Image (cartoon, rainbow, N blue to C red; front, top):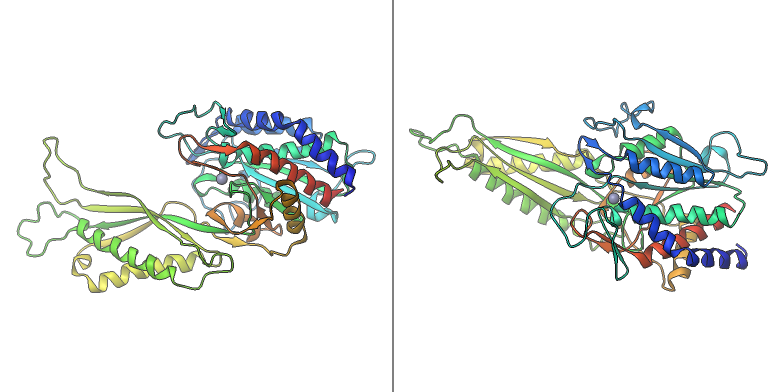
Length: 438
Ligand SMILES: [Zn+2]
C-alpha cells in the first residue's frame, strides 16, 4: 500500500474516533439478548443492515433455517427457535461501472476478506454500577451488555469498512461483512448458515474479545448435567444399605476432579502448552427441606451441571466416552454408586476447539498492521475461550483468526471494552482491508 494511503487511513480513523465509540454505543443500546431457545437480535440486525446499505453494500438478510442443508449438517444441534432472528451479510465488490455479478468471496476467484461477529448477548443477571443498555463511557472504558462480547469489535470492523468507502479506495477483491445471531450458549447456527449460504473468503477475522491477541486457535468445550437417581427411597426404612443419590454424586464429583487433574498432564497442542482446561461445576442440586426446615426423605435424584474445556483436536466422541469411562470406573470400585443409576444430559452442543495455519499470509498482514498501529510487537496465542470459530475452521473453506479488544466482565455486570483498543482495531482492520483487497 502506498504510504499516503496508509497515512490517510490512520488520519481518517483518528478524526472519527468519536464515531467509532458512537457506533459501539448505538449497538450496545439495542438489547439483543439470547435466551435459549429464543433470541431478540432482530432490531440490532436491522440496524446493522441499514448501516451496510448506507455503505453501499449488497445486503443479504436471511433466516438461518432458510438455508438448505443446515438442519441436516453434522454440526447442527436441534432445539433453537429462529423466529425473527435474521443473519445479515453485506458485500462490497470491485466496482468499475457497478457491482460485479456472481458469487462473492472465494468462489469469485478474486481475493477476499470476511469480518464476522455475533450480535446476540447473554441475558442481564445481577446489577452493576452502570446501566446494561446505556453505553456509558468512563475513563476510556465503554460499559454495557455486549460492549466487550462483542459489539465493540463489530463496531470496529463496520467503521473500518466505512473508512475504506469514504476514502474511495478502489477494491480489487471482495469484502464481506457479516453479523450473525445465536452464538451464545453454543448456538453457532447463524455462523454455520452464513458458510452454507456461500459466504467464504481467503480469511475471516473474528473480533471476539481476546485482549488484542492474534489467535489462530481457540478452545472448545461442552456443558453437561450428570444425574444420580434411585426411585422410591424415601426414608429408606428397612433397607440394610441405603440407596443414596446424594452421596453417590459426591463420589462422581471426586472422580471428575481426579480425571480433570490427570488430563492436564497430557501433551497439549502447540500454543496451548501452558493452558489449564477447567472443569467447572456451576450448579449442584438434590432434595429439599420442608417449610419448617427439616428433611423428610432421601431425594430420588441429585445432579451437577458443569462446563468442561478442551483443546483443538479433541472430538465429541473422545470427550464423551472419556466422561462415561470416568463414571464407569468410579462405579466399579464404589458400592454407593452401584446402588444408583447415572444419566447424562448434554446442555449445550459440543463446541470443538479449532485452529488454522499460522503462516497464512493475510494473518501476517494483520499482525504487521496491528504492530504498526500499537507500536508493540504483535502477541500471538490461542484464544482462551470456546466460540463459533470452529464453524469456519472445521466446517467451511474459510480459516478464521481471532483479534479483538481488551476489556472485562463479559457475561457479568459492568461488562466493558477498551475504547483505545476499538480505535486501534479500526485502524488495523482498515489497513488490512487496504493491503489485502486494493
Ligand atoms: Zn462472544
